[in-house]
Amino acid sequence: RVPRVDYTLKYGIPNACTTPCHTDKSVTWSNDAVVKWYGPERKRGNEYVEALDAARRGLPDAGKALRAAILTPAFPPIARATALVSLGEYYTPASIDALQAGLTDPDAIVRAAAARTLTSLDPPDRVRLGRALLTDPVRLVRAWAASALAGTPPGLLTPDEAAALARASEEYLALEMAVAERPEAHLNLSTFYLRQGMAREAEAALQTALRLDPRNVPARVNLADLYRTQGREAEGEKALAEAVRLDPRAAEAAHALGLLYVRQGRRDEALTLLERAYTLLPRVPRYGYVYAVALHDAGSVSRAITV
Image (cartoon, helix red, strand yellow):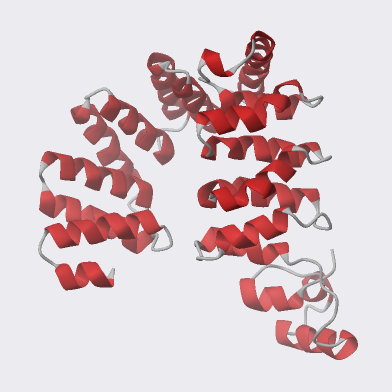
């Protein structure tokens, strides 16, 4: 793509000017040369980088920027697909046109990404927008649509659509089992099973992920959450404490264990862990909000307001 030395200065991404060509020059030198040659208002065309950066840093305008990137046909399919996957965390009804555009995009990688983002919608809207993907000509799209629509109430599908969902679900299972040596595959399978209410199969998939990688923090956090829904708090606490021990910088594990301590009335221990999660990942609004509520409940009102 067109080198963006200004993006190296702003975001730290590489560029073809200083790597591998002008290795003896600074990034500033290269940027000044580009501005001199083409002017400060030159045509650029890689602005999707700004949207992806906003999403990864949790900036307030991330959702708006992602929507704009998805709706820009001139951007590469891989960039629009990445924006669609990121949109899941920032989805609002105002983004519906971007999701619809992704679901009908000519490029299969964009449609597959849009299928994954369907999980941000309520089940009726998920089915309304995603049912056509169950018979998409590309298997990857069908498989991710099946994952998103797993557990759909029977009344929302026609008999033909239910049959298509069953076929696509088999394709999704085959897709994950093709890489079954990777713990991530079993993490995905556990989510797939949970959407269908298959708690036993979901637990088995998470245990498999941990057998493959005992240090896999997301698997431990998900397993603890499953235990929570089943009233198995002691086992959940054990899983989360181990996750925090294995990776003290895992904000998700610290946050989840803090919430468990809140439920147990262990306020001081909870506050310490909720603060750790917020400190490790201040860009995640939920961590800051929950920590602030805990501070307020502990009597630290001014600190809570600041957070």
